[in-house]
Length: 284
Image (cartoon, rainbow, N blue to C red; front, side):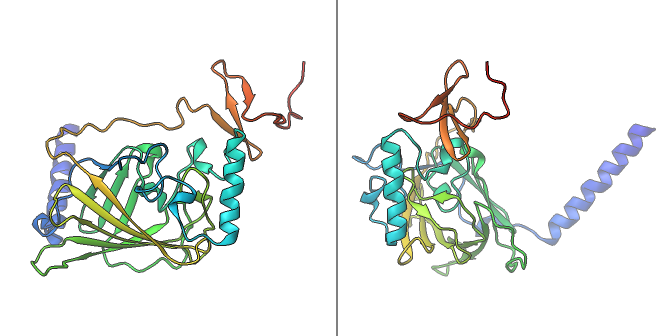
């Protein structure tokens, strides 16, 4: 009897889902085909950690329009890194790099399009995003996050009756955030914003373009970079689990970076580094 009641309730619930689904039918044919695993396209001769502009090496070769203050932060960060420190690079302990740097994926990412939301699934550091396309306005009391709050709008740029471009604005960003592994900073002021135009290349259906414009007080002017991602349409996609924190030997204590040895012992990351405050531990 209990099973019959459960079965009946399930049938009713399923019927409700169908009705609700019909009320807001999703015409997938109106949306572009962004299925598959998208990966950052490597540029020959540009190796090492990826720069924010993927066509250039990270750091000063990026030629970012930094303010003198931001440039000084990056220079100090790189000097610390030469000594073995991490400088202004918060991601080394697996903290999310935040927007816009999450769109420089280390691995693959996936786009899942629904009428209300376009989801961007990124396995590394679990940097997934929600881009709301349901016509909502900005929240009055926005909670600041590393990823920010993204609102998008689909565009039919060539008038063929099918959406081809997703325009996105991201607000509500907090720090600490850096543009690349050198510690090129973002100041995360209240007016910090990221604008995107995401679309397939019109001649190459397996090439996705993301034109990103970053507005921040660390920059003297808006900085626009076009990122390129590729996919293999024949790939049987497998999404591996990526736990950045698992096996990560870096640890931060009181704002200082240290190493964990293979035996689990705390080690300095640079010459002459003082140990952390051990006042709450009994010393032998």
